[in-house]
Image 1 (tube, rainbow, N blue to C red):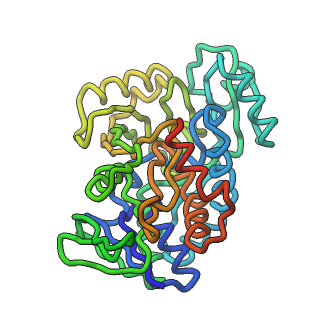
Image 2 (cartoon, rainbow, N blue to C red):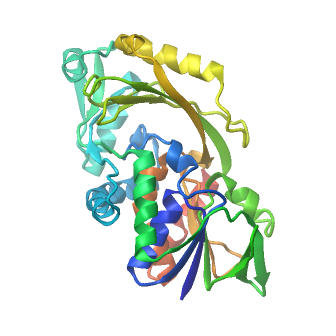
Length: 363
């Protein structure tokens, strides 16, 4: 059985990895270098932001992925020699109006979560300047370093024998009698038994070329800034007002990110840099002592309520979609791809096989 995956982000590469581990013949194509779009640009938090806001379907995927990540990242390091920098940082969230919802969600889903007072916030993050009497603390939230997991996964799939075709822009699908017989790229037509679209923010645009049944996925720009500081200046992921600070092992601090519905425009802006800088230095005044080392932007695959599309396309029996993860591509990737393999093998139960497509459309 031959599989062709379009889109070399974390969803596409992880799908290729899992299929290849089962001995499948896999080709992965990307219009540029694999892992260089939203996978590269994201923060790498292995948890949804404000996880209690999401439907049960997202919690289910996130919980399964969180269980898979330690072994997965060990495997990637061993196979590729590149460390994805999986790190349990814990996440501190300032959301006074949502504390009760968070506690109820944690009890229902058996998660480690507690409400901590102001003095404990200061103990966890001495440089943080809270203007609240309490916070939500999740000690077991982890992170990966996006560029490193992208490089690690790319090297791993190559070593496993996935045919990786980069700089192959996808122009369309070749269809016949309810099946996809191939994909047309900028360089040639490729054929496979099953086609899996993992094309992120470009998925709806692509599907519109051959179908009126188009998933509701749109590009959402996110901009980040990066500080180079001393290690352990900030120790934990900190989240407030939909903004997050993520400390890396080497002392770099990511801060982001904006949520901008600006189409496929990926350029950074001075306004966003100024806004992000003001917000983070208000909470972490010590960061005023450090320069912004880098600013970048990425395009997330936005979907209603952040629910991804994981399903077979209803018009083509061998065409599948795994896209629309919005801000949760990293945390949902392992379980999303695991579910996709069940769909391909015909072993997903009825609720799994249609749940994510339908829920994304209802949301």
